[in-house]
Length: 379
Figure (tube, rainbow, N blue to C red):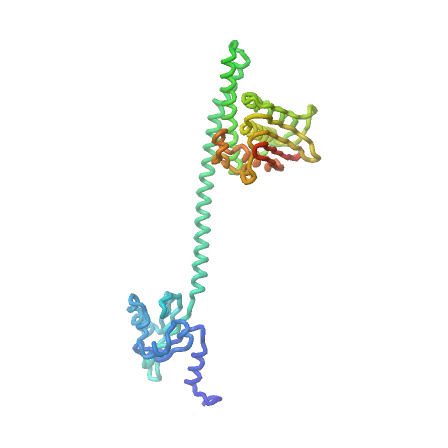
């Protein structure tokens, strides 16, 4: 006898009953349940009177009735049977379990029982499935990213080629129209000059659209580069204003340019500054039916501020956060009336940021808008 008057079998029984995280069954050589612990009751959901004295295959679903004999046969032939898989509780819920069946032999080597131990691994299974799903998601995102990068590269190549092919004839149209406007081939009457001005404006408008599409493509592909040089910001502003002046005049708008006469030398990218100002002025003229469009420039310490004002339709407060989004205007009613694809302001912001600056907007519906581009004097 052991201390406390417990023999070995009683002590073993108490130890088995004390294990709460494992379901421990004792099966006779045929697979009938002779005893189990409290962990088995908690895991399987049966009371003792429902399972003691019954073959353990009783508690398997109908589609798994062939499993218990196979499990016992393997345990007897190989000394143990172990697997992980789904098991079913009394209430029909499933759980992922590790099952171990071990044969027990008496002194004479005869099989006297099987010990069946089941452990609930559902939480571990869920964690593994979540990790697997995460890995699959990452792989899918990586594959999608590679496809997108490949498509983006193809798009950039296509746009670069097409922009060259389109710009060449458009520049020719603009060049020939300017020769005609200068009356080099011969004199023009008023009607001819009017039509010629429309041709020139349309060609310049189309050229601006092509430049914006190409810029967006290059920026998104990380291929847009800066060419910093010493440039006269005032001269750039006046050039940009002159490009848009014919369109403003055609609409009968008052067009004001307030640029200091003296040179204002800065270190920046002349092409990108000109594109920023041209886009802002074009946008202002586009959405102004009557009144004034103006451009001004001021030096503010280490920054240069360009301000474009208009007395156009204005932008509702709820839309002001979106005007710099790519293609946003393409879905708005105002663009449908005024034309454009909604890239002009998006390009303005992209290029301003590239130059180390920013762009701000103030607008009131029915009153007009004010765009302020702030660029560092030394980019």
